[in-house]
Image (cartoon, one colour):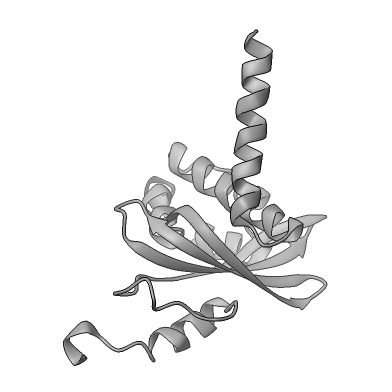
Amino acid sequence: MKPLIYLLVFVSGLAALKLHANSKSDSILIAHYLSFKQESTETDGNLDLSRYLSERLTRIVTQNVPKRRRKDYFELAAPIQHINNSLRKNLSNTESCLLLIGMDSMGHYALGSIRFKREKGGWRIDEFGFFIPDKVSETPKEALCPEGLVQWSETVPEPWMK
């Protein structure tokens, strides 16, 4: 009986992931992000970065973020906990950006943009960007790369300006 229950839980989890992804390719990138998110917050700096990050980002992290601080760093860099929707922008066959729309760990509406590069036969995270808007209605209409999310966020009025 237990194998059937585990199978149902696994299939249910996949079904939930597909509900929030706009396409199969989005699902692959989202699964990669969620796997990275889970593993990076469960380890104390001993994560094999090359499984998830591009060579460029791996080099930046290893040179600038001490192992004892990596868990905190990745929690800040990848804050989206619950994904409600995603938008993807293909830049080339080897580069895509994924905009995640969801909630952070504190229950705030949040937007996360991730640039992925295809390296070593799979997708690797090359850059992160995130923004916590004041309202749910403040959402880009198309997928944005991290630098595009920064530019877009500068057009969103601050609550005190309204």
